[in-house]
Length: 216
Image 1 (cartoon, helix red, strand yellow):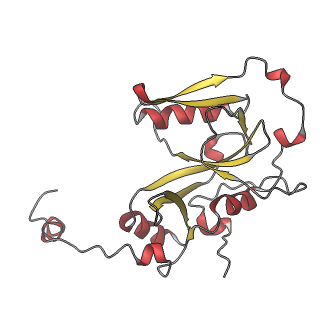
Image 2 (cartoon, rainbow, N blue to C red; image 1 turned 30 degrees about the vertical axis):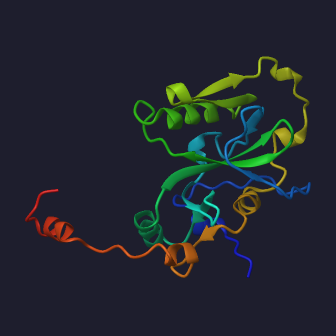
Image 3 (tube, rainbow, N blue to C red; image 1 turned 180 degrees about the horizontal axis):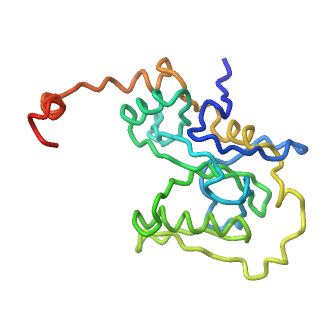
């Protein structure tokens, strides 16, 4: 059975604004930030802010070969909360939609940053680069020595061909998400990833904290 989702199953806050309907067939949508040699731009949703992209929840899970794969978590808010407790490596993200200069569409899971004055360098610099990419062609490269990303800006922005695909999505946002996640979608307790995660058991410590006997 094909496992696809609708946006109303995965959006935590209703701020969704659909992209342009598909006029060109794109069978592959990359999932992840662009490569270090890719010039890219992001498509604007709503007013062209990162916050216009709906906040969603993903989890990273390993396959039989030990390779990480992101899963998109859907369902009601109670189920999402249960997943965030039960599943490892859950992240609140904005799934931003963009295009490379080579015309490869991508979905970038950008970790939500509440305050740019604090937090992890990777997350903060990634957020700043993504904001710039709404209006300019840019690159993102890892600076592991300083735990951050480097922002490379294209000096001659006017050299990029004026093609429609660079300003309007070739396929709509919901379709792009489904293509990027390739049926990796958790929306019920029956999903194997959720079912095989085990159960959370209250420790005596947690019970004592709940009773007020021990201060947390």
